[in-house]
Length: 207
Image (cartoon, rainbow, N blue to C red; front, side, top):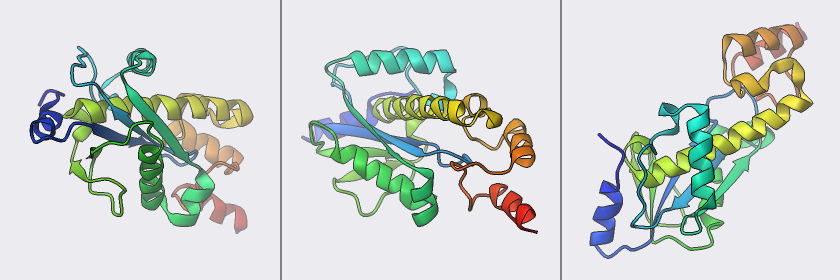
């Protein structure tokens, strides 16, 4: 299915004028924050290449991010929940908190929100959850790009603080390179200590 305004258009036709899309980046990595973004696109918005950020390469994401954030008709926000908060409340709750914070920070309150994945409860606005929504809804796709680019930039900044781990390359995901550096250097302060294999390395260091 091509990424489109199908879901937004159904809401607009029912009289719901302001529809936002929301998505996250960073649920799976072993280190760093989880980031959510929320986007309201104008109804006449068009884009030839916007889709799920996972289907785009880094230059494409950066280009689309620049276009979206420079467009004065696009209302958007992003919110990050850091690794220590993820450890305290777990990754699912942290992701939902990031989503709630992002939507509450919008300059324009939405009438309805389209969320990638499963429902978020509680949530401050009426919402519809769409599995694989980032590949179906342009609003969610826009949020996925902003969330992904925002988080990648954070991880490049953290790479400068912790150069031994090559965060700029793998962005904290459990790649072979990351796990090799983790075994060599042990966890650093931004690692999620409850995530395997970080927890495994901590056990080895304690034994």
